[in-house]
Length: 441
Image (tube, rainbow, N blue to C red; front, side, top):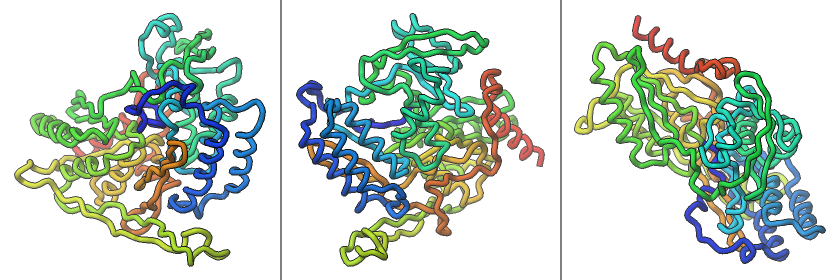
C-alpha cells in the first residue's frame, strides 16, 4: 500500500480548488508556521543538520517569484523543506481542496533492488487500455530514466528515517503529481519485451486507495505453518481476527509447525500500537517490556548557544508491560514464531518488534525496519494547513535508540529481482526453514 501522506484528509470537506487557492500572504504565513513549529515539537531537532533558516528564506523567495507557483507546486516545495527533518512520520496536511489536487495513477509500485516494479493495478477503463502487466519494471517516466526521475524529482521530497526506507517511499510515490495530468511510461515486461504505456494521475491522495488490502489476511501453508499477514494495525478488529487465526492453528494438531507473522507491509500509521501489543499478548507466557520514550520540554531558560531550543530538557517515561492473555480469553500460543520485517515496516509494527525482541520470543527475518515510530502531534498552521511531526524519542528498554537506524533482523535476507520474477519469496522460505529447524529439536 502506498504511503499514507494526507490520509488524515480523506474524510475532509470539499470546496473548489479555485476557492481554496492560497494567497501569497497565506503562503507566507504557512511558511512562517512551518519554520517555527518543528523547533519546539520535533523530538529529533538536535539531529537536523540542514540550515533551517536558509530553507525558510528560500521558500519565501519561491512564494514571491514569477510565475506564481500553483498550489500543488507550493505543496511540493513545503514537502521538500520538510524532508530536511529526516522524520519518517512527517506529514504535510494542506486544506482538503488543495490536497485533493495531488493524485496518483491506480498503480501499486514497489522497490526491488532499488528498481520500480508494478505489483498491482486497479482494472479500470484506462488500465485495460494501458495494460500495465504485474511485475513490469518502469524503465522511464516522461522519457527520463526511472532512476534519474526518482533521484531528482522524488527523493528530495521524501522524509524518512533511513535511506532504504526513503527510496521505498520514493518509488511508491514516484508517479504522484497534479490530478488529471498524464504520464508516459516505458515498461519492461516480465518476459523481457519493452513497450510504452500512458497513465493518468486520477486517484487523489485524499481518496480511498482502490488497491487497499485487508488489514489482516492468513493462510495455512502445506507444511502446516500458519502465515498471517498484517497490512495495517489501525483496524480495531485486528486483535480479535488474530486470535481466531491462532485458534485455527491449534486445530491443525500435530501437523502444525509454528507461526509466521508477516509485518513486511505494515507501513506507518497514526495508531495501532495497542493492537500490536494485544496480538503479542497472545504469543507470550510471561510479561514483556515495551519501548521507553522521552519528549522535549520547552523551557526558555534552556535556549542558549550551548543548548539551542529545548534540547536540554526532557520528560521521560519508562517502558510499559505487556501481559500474557488472560485465561478467560484463551491460552497463550506456545509454538515457534518468526516475524518478517522489511524496510517498509514502520510505526506500531516497529513497536511490536521492540517488545518481541526484548522478550526473546522468536526471530525477526528479512530487512532492517524503517526506523520511523514514536508518538506524533498534528500541529495547526495558518490558513487551515497542518503539520505532523514526531514528538517522542523511542528506545529499547535499555535505552538504545532505533529511530533513524531501524531494527536489524536476526536473519538478514535480501530481496532480489530474479526471485520476485520467478515467484519465489526468499524471506518467507527462510522463515519456513527456521520453523522446520525448530520442529526437529
